[in-house]
Amino acid sequence: KSVSDTFHFGGRILDSLPPDVRAVTDDDIKKVQQEARTLVRAQALRKPQALSLAISGLSEFVRFDRVEGFAIGGGVLSRFGGGFGAQLRARYGIDDRQAKGSAGLDWQSPLWGLRLSAQRDFRDAGDIEERSRLINSVAAQEFGSDATDPYLTQVGGIGLDAHDFLGLHWRLDASVERQRPLSIHATPATGHFDPLVAALPLRGLRGAVGVERPTSLSWFGTEVRATAELRLTHARADDRQLAPDDMNVLRESASLWAERPVATGRLALFASGGTVSGTKGLIAQEWIYFGGPLSAPGYPYHSLAATSGATVRAEWRVPVPAPSLSLGRFGQVPAQATLAPFVQAAFIDRANPLDASHPSGGYPSVGLATQFFFEILRLQLARGLRHGGWSFNVDVSRDFWGIL
Image 1 (cartoon, rainbow, N blue to C red):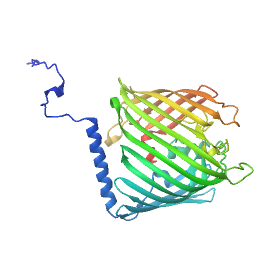
Image 2: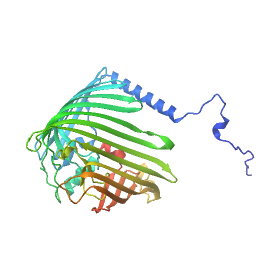
Image 3: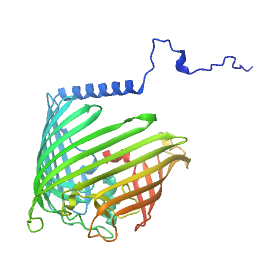
Image 4: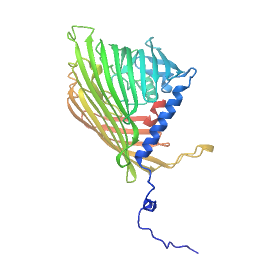
């Protein structure tokens, strides 16, 4: 015997709530999440801790790049209680036979943080990380494809952090720096390495204000993450014949990641850009760089260099049927993958005058990516439509880059 529905409710579900009962809103959820983070941070900072590993991913133990070849490293940290702590990191390159490292002291409270640090280490000229560090090590060692562009820095600095101020994370840094170009020491199994960034040897004072909006829900169910930085450097070149005058370099940069459900799929947007003034075209390590799987697919790594530029990508991610793989007693991989066609365009102004093949203007790309195995593995094929070519990239999902 079947039971038929004899009651039809024409209103909304929440209309049945009593007038003195209020539904939970997104703002209420954000407040609870913020309070929980504050309580967890305060509890962790109060307790003294013995030495523990201080690593940001597996590649801190071992990595490969065109400067160091194989490099072995690690780090330790300790919390003394009362919010005070210290950390020490070190790394040694097999091919360049150089040690690098950093040391820092910090004080943290639920709302504020203070940092003192000193380091002799590499800094990358690009704002956008193009590959996970693990995949980049494999690509560099086997095929001579290194998506890093480092230069040497010797830095002593102080920093101030503001946690969850106006829902944002703020950072204020001031440092005394010395910067130097690096040389290629490693040899890949096949192929050859491209030249490194021609960093200008200099010393100077540097100050920066940064802000980050952690990934969280925004309007219309959109997940948004954003970062921005304003940086001022007073620089003096070591070789006064190259740059006889001191330079005040102002650099502004920002990035945005957004994703929201649309119909049966998800629309993902990415934008990043910046502008530099005061370099007189001499300080290459301060330029804006595009080129690579994320910033400008279909164009060689960092081939689009300028003192002003931006890149924008729109990607449509839709689930599609796929073969299911058995994982034995752990179950099986779902019979589903994600297909992600995308369009992208990079725009550069005041381009590198030494590169006539990439003048100022727009550099569009089109491509198709596939993510499978629980969306952990991503395959991407792209074509650069202006002075570009075909490119193919294999990597893990960006959500896992932090642990690699």
